[in-house]
Image (cartoon, rainbow, N blue to C red; front, side):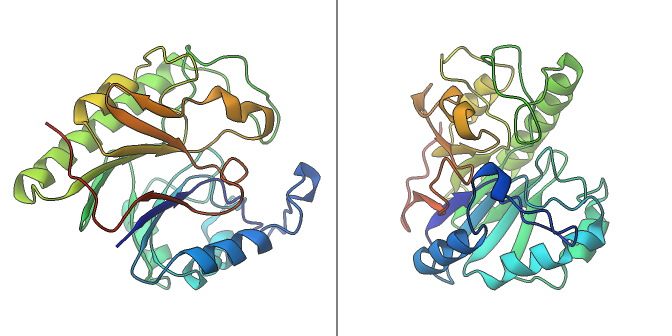
Amino acid sequence: MRLFAIGDLHLPSSRAKDMERFGWTGHPGPLAAAWDALVRPEDLVLVVGDISWATKPHEAAADLGWIEARPGKKVLLKGNHDYWWGDSANKLRQLLAPTPSIVGFLHNGSALAVPPYLLAGSRLWTTAEAPPLPGGEMGDVPASPDYVLREATRLSRSLEEARGLLRRQPQLTRVVATHFPPLYAGGVPTAFSPLIEDFAPAVCVYGHLHGPGISAGFVGLHGGVRYVLASADAAGFRPLQLLPAEAPATGG
């Protein structure tokens, strides 16, 4: 099972909100074609937030169906635009029941084992260490100490749950998925990056950044962790392969 990631699908929902004004020509057609060509049914794809423009659960049904139609197993993470997601894990499970290839989600501090991978993470938020970033509908949101603290708590809870799963299945390969960047281009630690680096995953993948903001995210090795940006436009509108079928477990 290879591991892929893609973020910021920004699917149109029943509100028919297209992406042409952002220069995403024909979206999501090119992404669907690339996904279908790259991913095999036995692979796993992490979808790291901003999945749909829907604001209510029923508005997201067709977009979830679009994901279901793509090859591979999928795990979802909430982004800042995913207003349809809601606060109830049980209701989310009910919403996802017609899409069996979506095998799980990370929600409010949860972790998930999809062997051979152990998945942890949270949405996160913009931190004070972020450089100036573009705003607007597809831009960044202001830093908020309260939101950062809340998300650091959720991330810590997810990592602790993952450690519990790892004690029972120590052969699993650790992976962290977030929506907002946990680390920015300058490499200055945030409230999130030391938590992730202490967990020692094989890779940490995130999204959120678009257009001129793409260069603001840290990409590469920091504190022993490989950070990867997988927002749709940063990834060239194709899922990024994070790990091969046989990945090192890493960790300490």
